Picture 1 (spheres, helix red, strand yellow):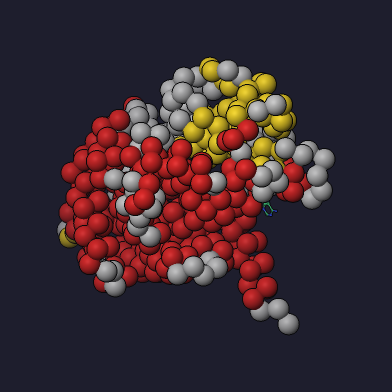
Picture 2: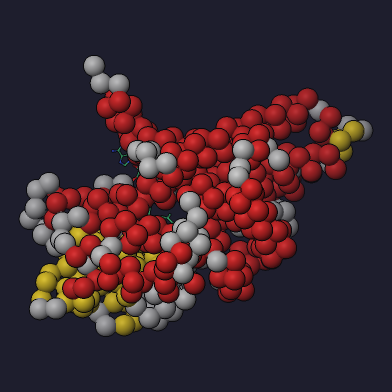
Length: 393
Ligand SMILES: Cc1cc2nc3c(=O)[nH]c(=O)nc-3n(C[C@H](O)[C@H](O)[C@H](O)COP(=O)(O)OP(=O)(O)OC[C@H]3O[C@@H](n4cnc5c(N)ncnc54)[C@H](O)[C@@H]3O)c2cc1C
């Protein structure tokens, strides 16, 4: 038990223990084999449904568990310790649920949340386009009102869960002439048949081939006069989509920080074991001071990242503004994750480069965390803006 985890409530500890057991028994033993085949882990998803993880943060009145962000983040740490792609399956779903709970109409909450809580309906989140990711206001996809529908045209890029999701929260321009551009943006809840690559005016090309983060699919979405019922405009009013997406991504950042902690923790766990088993120059490499220094730095970084992640989540749970804290947690946890994973690979020597050792998967997974939910450079801009606001002369 680390220092940071010492301060959990009994309920939080019980839930984390439950998820940890699930990860140890049902994810870790099969993760690398599935990852190397790029195979979707259906049975893990069924297990997540049984655990209620798809409804973790959804209020009990909609059939969820009504847990807070802190407990959710701790569960994400555990899942990512097992296999980062599993946390990817629930991350966009969690963001979509958060957006509906905060910004959806009563009718939209009633219609979507109960099915989302059970995992019967799984969701994706789509802002990025081929020409823009960080610069969200540069999106080009449009939705034009036509009777009771919106007609959507454009192309979305890098949509995690893009094929298997039954609903995609999608950022579009409903008023392309608006200045500033964000005032003309809206979020549509685009329903679709999971697993079907052509329906109406929506085409989903074959999934993108990635360095890591395999198993969970990431796709493009191509819209050509695709009709979406107007009642699926999030919140029922045009022009608020940018704010809706940004709020969703803020909690998503705590989630990505949690992934960083989980992946780094796994890298540390396997490295400290290997260091005591592997011998060089007549003794375990853990007895060499150079390896000890690495282990000391790795452990310290993980503990610091966990505390930052918990602090951001607790602030959010307390209803306080936490954009700076979520940015700090995301930036630090993902940067140290990459450092820790690289050190763990070095500790494994040549075997770290072998596909037979788990560390090679962690080494390929970790860089995504520097990019998704806003790159490290964008986090620094957000943190600096927030700090300057808070410390304005
Ligand atoms: C595997 C994977 C899954 C993803 N899943 C999703 C998803 O589910 N939904 C979704 O909407 N998106 C998703 N994304 C997209 C992801 O959020 C974007 O890739 C990310 O926001 C960066 O955008 P970009 O790739 O267009 O890079 P760019 O914005 O083109 O940035 C390129 C480089 O320039 C830097 N840069 C850009 N602007 C500035 C600036 N103002 N100051 C300093 N540096 C700057 C960036 O930090 C980066 O280093 C996914 C991406 C990947 C790789």
